[in-house]
Image (cartoon, rainbow, N blue to C red; front, side):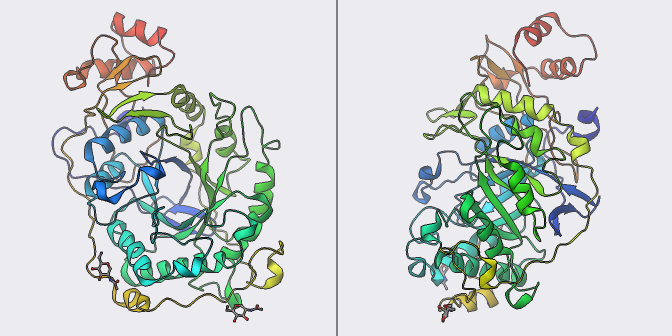
Length: 481
Ligand SMILES: *[C@@H]1O[C@H](CO)[C@@H](O)[C@H](O)[C@H]1NC(C)=O
Ligand SMILES: *[C@@H]1O[C@H](CO)[C@@H](O)[C@H](O)[C@H]1NC(C)=O
């Protein structure tokens, strides 16, 4: 049902419809058209891992159309509505990938930093890394992504405060970067794209981190250095855990009065393996909703740290899906996302605490709110805009089919995969894209028969007569899409 109403089935060139830019209201992301609060159903997307980012390669995760089409189609089948992308080169063109993810009904959380020297705040000596050329690059990322309607937020830092030992001086620099980015957005972007910090879940200093970034200096709520959002990378739910055993209940209690949206910018403990992803049922239930705005699963591609759902074969860009992919898909399918995403925003606002030393509980954590002033040359960029600057825009996409081979976790080739472009203001949910069909015999995805994948779509919704061969594969397979 959802498929017919939501999907704009399109062949040939299409003017991409657009997702609705979301707004922060109180502690929620809100769709201003519907007045509904938005829950992030996110996926960390960093093919190659953080070590794989090298601007000299001339590519980053959002610069190759065919790769983005492959991954957008697979994430669309999962039910993802947001990707998080860490390492971007502002000098590359991201128009096709941003347009593909937009058409697939997915927002983008964009990290402005990278692991390369000079492209992030150094947490041992932060003052050595806060200079105009660094900010220039972060502003270039803002310029490159500001025109895409699906840009959801910018992260001004990711796990810069790695433990309590580096929590002196580092917070004030990250808050200063947050301020500079917010001023840049205010002066040069026609909508208030939120900016905030993505914290490591170091429980002893988590509350301090949140308070340091959300508090109002001199009690001024409009203080430009206050973060617009606060996110945490949390791995405390492992295996067959529960709301209480995982400590999610403590998180809800801690963040109950948050003045800004809070969400998991990463989750997905990988022990035991294979994963169960039972936390999905808690995150999208009354346990967490209202305080948390969903979360981002870590992560799409399989890398050395073993958190992936899909293994990319670098020689031919083919994909082997891992069993965790199917497990996560099943967990998402057990959530009633139509209900989850149609809850009216509360429009309730908790005032931020005032920044003062007593707000900070751990004596090792920074409690000085005197921020460094912008480095020499930075204020001019903030006032006048950077030059030269990248310009991004949505573009027409005329090819939605996945051109690379994809195999499910049993090694069967999946044919007929494509991105389903969605209508205006439609966000992806599980079921929007029912996906291709399994064909153990053929690996030629270009030659797939449309009527075949349509039949599988119907088969999985339980209507219409199913061709016998397909019906069998539906029944014997652990799951089709
Ligand atoms: C910002 O970076 C660009 C190159 O991307 C350079 O041309 C420009 O001079 C830089 N501006 C400042 C103020 O450093
Ligand atoms: C806070 O930091 C500023 C700037 O480094 C410094 O001048 C001031 O003395 C510090 N305040 C306290 C109470 O240490």
